[in-house]
Amino acid sequence: MGRKSSQKKNAAMLDSDDTASLSSSTSSMPLDHMADFGADEVVVNDDTLLDQYLDALFEKRGATREKALASIIEAFNGHLQHSFAEKKFATLLHQCLNSVKKGSAKEVTLAAHAIGLLSLTVGPGDKALEILEESFVPISEALRIHPETSKTSSLLQCLAVITFVGGEEPEETEKSMQIVWQVAHPKLGPNVAAAKPSPALTAMGVTAWSFLLTSIEGRALNSKSWQESMSYFSTLLEKDDRSLRIAAGEALALIFEMGSLEKFCGDSKVSNVPSVDEGNDSRKSMHIHGLKNKILNQVRALSIEAGGKGTGKKDLNNQRNTFQDILQLVEDGYPPQTSTKIGGDYLYTDTWQDLIRLNFLKHFLGGGFDKHIQDNQFLLDLFGFAPKKKLLSGAERRMTSHEKRMYKSPNSAANKARTQSLNKQRMLSQDKNVGQFAVDFGDI
Image (tube, rainbow, N blue to C red):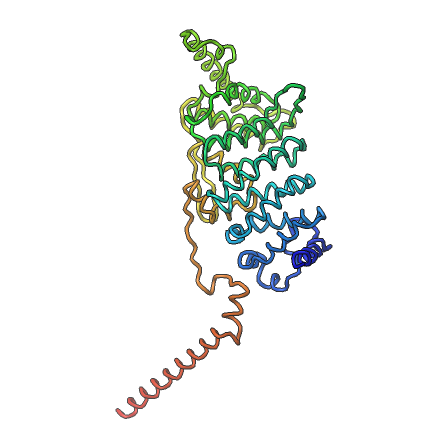
């Protein structure tokens, strides 16, 4: 009964006309103290709103669940919700998975993002592993039956994030990489016609695949799984879509940096020849050398490509800069060095591995990136980032509503104690002054 009553109350709250957009859903909640003390403080210090959003995920109306998911995402982006995630992660996970299985495209997109945020919030360990194990099949199934680009991209990002955080063995990561690869590079099967993905979806698949590859050491890779991937990336460098070319180029840069060309350069004509044939090794070496030279020429051309009709200057410069960095790695062995300003600090990268991780997580977290990179211990450790601690005095620090009642109210115990202390100090000061005046007077 309590659950049903609470759900009805929260449904009314979330369905109100005042909640006009997803981005304003938190600030439009009818809580008197929110306007006084700020939505951020309410979310951080009081789990009431998050509990209400979680209850709303049990509602039958899809629009209600969508608004609740959007509000949960906003809360998780605004602050690191460790307390709520620790206590309610299983309930939140299962309700999000229900949305993935049964929701609209918009609901699937939101639920997938929420699952990824939940994994990043709890960090590596048993909970992250459980998120991966519980989510793998539903997300894989959703990727198989949902061809729409919007939710498929969100599902790919979600799978990549929860695998990156929760995967403990290379086999788990490669299993997710295979799912991502099937979306980015579908192949015809028996009695199955593979739908050709859009350039944007292929680019997202390649990016998610590269992100997962950063978590596997080269020697742990299953060489048979990725044979001929270099050849596929080389073909993508010739596509018209610039984002697709950049995604393929970054994947190639990572493979070069790992020094695992042999694992990614398959040659079906060569691999079928028995390994005892010395000529086979020679032919395979020639194949790898030839493919490397082809890619080198492609990268060099893209690094100096002239703009054509309808070419955006910013996008063209981005491509040139990216492929100049890739060229420097392939020719000279030097990865790019980057710096990202976060608050008053700088986060530095000096490998393609870290740069790919950073760009992927920045894209996934969006507006919540700065908060997570400063407060999320998993990300701090991942990038070796140590932001300066800003120690605020009691007067400068924004108080919560509870603290204001405790310390600011005229009738609070703390305020009465301060008043008594000040009165006592005044009395002592007056007595001291009177005594000093008496001594001075007597000496005259």
